[in-house]
Length: 322
Picture 1 (spheres, rainbow, N blue to C red):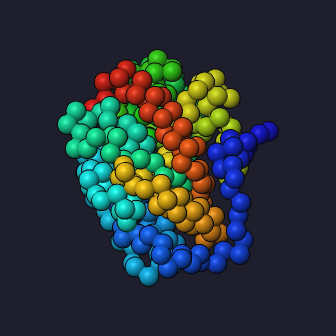
Picture 2 (picture 1 turned 90 degrees about the horizontal axis):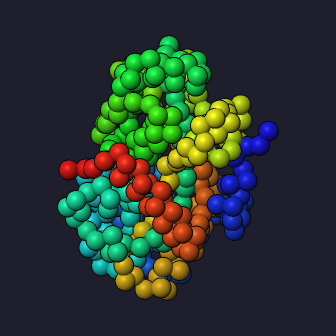
């Protein structure tokens, strides 16, 4: 039985763990990072991981690094702030799936997509299909319920165009199901109503497995090419006959366009050291994510593929953020 390691090994190519784990000391003339803009609210996994990165990066410089939450517009407000910042490596954006999808979803986007550029990917988390424990025990029962009552099956998501929303839309399209999407302002609100039984299903990261153990919800399958090392008994949707429904939450660092190449390379080196730190590896795992490092060319290729893949779903589903 394969687990989700082959893909991860490819994604994290070149990632060598520094088991010494000592805080990396930046040279005196290194760029002093002032802030990491987190374009979402406090308390979600993006916020927590952004603060973890800020803490690790700050260990290598004298200047404190602000974890700067600027929520709103599906992440567009914080992204616009970074896009319009001075391109000197002092202001970073912790981007996610919304960074790839917002240009297709927001008519009055407050920045030009070309005004930000990827630096490095820093984490990823495959999504898992969870359902109310009293609704279905497996995928067949869930699909039967949806077919018997078109539109009755409800999927929570953390916002229109978020990775859970896109995953649910792709899942429904692949099976020809009519479902109802219920959008919330952030992960915390979505998971709270899901656990309370107000919605039926939710695509979330491994962080929700703690609630599976209490019996409140049930994990049906993982939306990844292979099984997960941390949940080896959980089948993939591919195994269950739902092909190519692959979706994940992911995070990467972006900077304003025009940032000098020498600064970009310096930031990549510092980010790689931070991601390789055993503290970051372990804390990311507790959040339900995998801390991985992809350099600029690899991250750019991944980012471009996400844009192409999800733009097709956005157009088909007529998704938009006003």
